[in-house]
Image 1: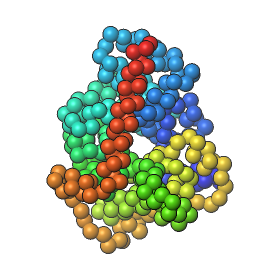
Image 2 (image 1 turned 90 degrees about the vertical axis):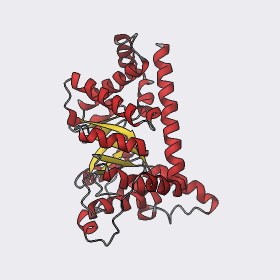
Image 3 (image 1 turned 135 degrees about the horizontal axis):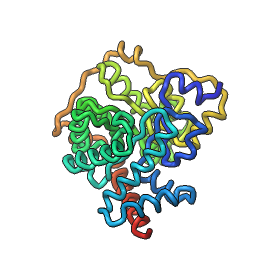
Length: 315
């Protein structure tokens, strides 16, 4: 049995791509997208007709509506290739506006419903700012499920659990990137691999906290740099993996055992933690890595949203 099939026995495998034509070979349960992945996909010749068709159909509408319709079009295509859910992201430029995020999320859901897609097959992706988490709490109360992204810190995860969000996406690879850059010449790749990888350690802490205290929010490790990070989180609720790394797992026959266990977490002696807005903001501020990576992630998604708008305007 290859490692991908082994991983699927104890973790839900999600494909991290906007390239729905790639999905069939890996048979993931769910798929996630973000503005950068959609931007990458629409620049490929095989997706040009889909982009042109969507733009032509909704020409004259506000740009934000055309973008949402394009994202939903991709989401609907992806849902033809996966049995589970697709994550569709709210514009990152709304990351500090709770009410605008809620409004945009509701429209995305309405567009999916107009295409005959059940609400339970869509996760609305929102950046895990304080405002984003509050928007997610409102949406969850309305039965709209959310995926909180750009999550780099334990404080963000705790606040998401309190908000009863459906799922969080802690970014393993970006945490690793930050610590590797900070380490500079003294960084020891071998010593910081596997269970000692700072990104892996972050997700492990979050997973154990959730399982220990019966928090129902699903943990989906994201943004992997290598297969070692994935295998060190085997047993996590879900892992969203880029096609290149899915291919590496499928090509490897080495045995794979779960690294995380809900039963083991339940027996751990861990402190219960909660946050209100001031304590959340302070805890996030104390975490230089999470503060920098959250800001950088929002900026990068916003840049790609603008590039996507320019592509649409050019058509």
